[in-house]
Image (cartoon, rainbow, N blue to C red; front, side):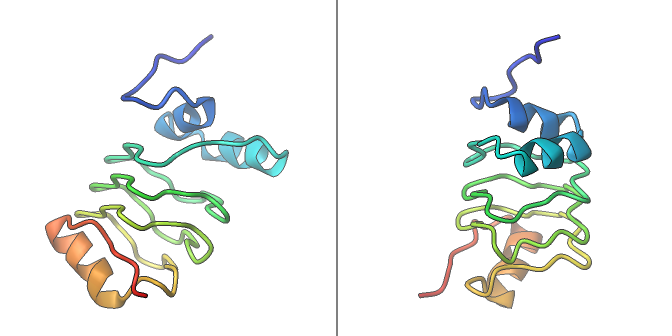
Length: 115
């Protein structure tokens, strides 16, 4: 059964995440399936358990998503917004300051990498 497109992203792996099929996403990623997730909408989703290593999530919208425990240390998050997301135990890239993360969580600002 084909998934209906959500937003602008027709990527099948994006749709797995939209359906919160995290284990299937991780399995397909491990097998080498490529995905384009930039500027995607993940509002309110439970993404716990996501293997984010090597993903480009720049420009993504994570408003009130559950990101607890995700290791984003090797993930591109520049321009992403975390307004109201649950981030307990999440590990962020060193290029993102704690202030950028806090501003994004409380005000929804887009995170900027420090140079």
